[in-house]
Structure formats: C-alpha cells, structure tokens
Image 1: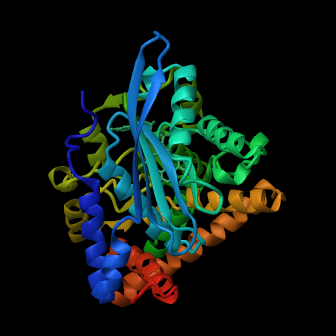
Image 2: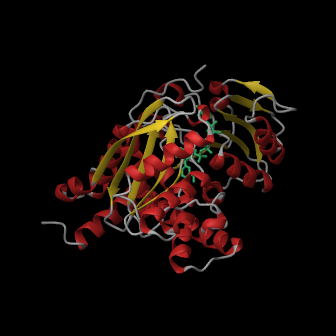
Image 3: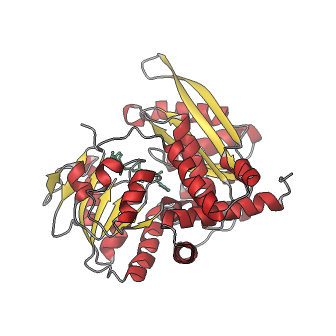
Length: 420
Ligand code: NAD
C-alpha cells in the first residue's frame, strides 16, 4: 500500500522552480543566476558488491557537488530504492541554500545509492558503503566535500566511510564525514540536531503567530530521526502530539501519544503501528488531521496539489527536504498556512555537522549543552533573518529563505571574481 497519495514529482524541477522565484524577487543578474543555478560537479558510479548469496550485484550511486562558492560541499548520503540522479541534484541544491541561510561556511552537496538497505545484511551494507566511498574518493575530503547521514544511513555508515578514506592516507581523518559515532570524533548533540533545530524554529514561529506551544496539536509524518526527536521535544514542552506515522502505517490518539513510550516501542518493534492506546488511521487521514503544527519528516512530495487542500494546520514545519511541491506551496499559502521551509527548518542537522567538523579540525570537543546553546542561537537568528525578508518583501517564507540563501551564494560568487 503506498503511504502517500502521489509521489511521481521531480524534486529537481521543484528546486529549479523555487530558485527562479527567489532569483526573480532578488532581481538577480542573469549571468550570476546561470553560474549558481546548476551543480558544479556530478559523478555517477557503479558499485559491484558480492552479496551474501555469493552473487555480484551492481548498484548505482551518485555524488553531486552543487556549489563550493562559500566553502567545501556538504551534504548527506541517502540509501533508498527510489534514489535518482535528479533527486540527488535537488537535495544538493537545497544544501547550498541551506548552509547559506544558517550562514555556515559550506557549499552544498549530496550523495545517494539506489538500494534497499532494509533487505541487506550488515556485511552487504558495509561492502556497498566501502565500495561507494572508494568510488567517490576523488571528490570527498575535509576541505573538499564532507558527507553525512541522510535517509537510511547512520553513524555506522559514516564510520565505514571515514575508515575507507583514512586507509588511503595512512592516518585517521575524522573531518571527512560528520554524523560519526562519538568514539570516532562525532559531536555530542549531532544525532538529535535536526529534530532540535525543527523544535527551535517552531518555538520562534509559535511566538510570532501567538500560538501557545502548550496544548498545540501536532502531527508528525515520518517518525524517524528528525521526526521523532522533534516530537519528543514538542511533547516535553507540553505540545500534544496526536498522530505519527512511518513507512508501515499511522497511529492516532486525540488525547496525545506518549512520545517517549512510542520511541521505545518503535525501537523494539521496528515501527509505530499497533502502538498500545492508539488507533490506526490512513496516511491521507493523518495529513488532513486538524492540528496547529504539521511536521512532514519523511520524504519529498508528501503534499502535492492533490492533497494540499485537505490540510487543516496553521503551521507546516518542514523537517523533511522538499515535502511540499510548488503547487502545494501556493495552495497552502492561499489558505494562510505558515510554512517553515526545509532549508531553514531542518538546518539544525548541518549546523551541528559544522560544529562536528570544527571540533574534528581543532581536536577539541564541546559539551552537549554548549552544542545545544550554539544551535539554538543559529536557528533563532536564521528564523528572524528569514522572517524579516518575508515581512519586508511580502513574499512567502520559502521564497524569503531562498532569497537569503541564494543572495549570500550570489554575493560570494561575485566576490570570488568568477564573474567575467
Ligand atoms: P530516517 O530514516 O531516520 O527516518 C525517515 C522516517 O520516515 C522513517 O521512520 C520511515 O519509516 C519514514 N517514512 C518513509 N517513507 C514514509 C512515508 N511515505 N510516509 C510516512 N513515513 C515514511 O530519516 P531522517 O534522517 O529522519 O530523514 C527524514 C527527512 O529529514 C528526509 O527528508 C531527510 O532528508 C530530512 N533531513 C534529515 C536530516 C538528518 O540530520 N537526519 C537533516 C536534514 C534533513
């Protein structure tokens, strides 16, 4: 059963459409526009891996560096059966604007391998990861391009990439990836950084809109790393998380789900379905559930023209990348829904990745509270920067965030003298 109604939108086309809207609003010179719009480098690799049954399966993967105008490329690696080059290009493009929105000295990159990690053993995953790391080796490095986890990759995958890269140099180079285990130079607070950043932007949005967080009804689509941690922090701050879902199904309790218990239940059973005290609902019902805050935290295109009208929320906090198509954006804006766009909302992950990289480069590690305080400062400052553009230019929050990010990348590009 497909868990969302329609998924066949091209994320890269959406990224380009949103770019044009913001570039028009900025009245960006067309030469600069062309220079910063397309990816700088695109690499496609084929990865033969011996599977546990002795057969060799050849996987396809990609690494895209969209921009290095403001610093090394930065972006996660996704393992998913639906990974395509266009999806990776879209995700790399969003990373460029995202790093610029939170003003960290990175450009944008992304990687992906078309595979189904849920059907692979740990040994197969390790072989695939090491093969992929070797194949993209010419592109990556602490000063060039720094991968991190994304959907269905984790700190163990980062550890294998760090080791594969370090083997070619003869000494450990932790700064080549972020989202590593703490024992290998990871940062405290990285695992929960995306969810925490989503929470920080929601605090700012609730304050701006005069919506009390206490008692606010919250719906979370995608109860994974980003979604579950945002839910946990919202729950701890007395919001009422009434519905949550993952790839297997959705659960609902109008009185509020016990989020710490749901996290423990998902860890134990591998999913949210049949959580005691909840009732099952369909993915369509979940998205249409009346609430104050909807957190799409799964994949792209969750909300499209076909289902946007059905939403009954005041705020959409985009924990996922690209969960709204441009058509859905227009429909929700017309309905007066306040959108915290992905490149702002989920930027907590890359912000703490930046902190991790700084700590690795300095060999000096920070306490968790130090990470949280710095993260909150970055998220709330960035929220206010975007809000100011939204209010002064009378554009939607997405266009405002894109204007901030694209404007900063354009400025860096011109200053570097790449402009003829
Ligand atoms: P994850 O693998 O931990 O979680 C994804 C969750 O979504 C899983 O629980 C999965 O079952 C669920 N899911 C998948 N398809 C679904 C569907 N159709 N309907 C409902 N649920 C579905 O991944 P994550 O790291 O939490 O990433 C989620 C989103 O957040 C992605 O868009 C990712 O790009 C974005 N993001 C993550 C980070 C990060 O640091 N983890 C940072 C920025 C953005």
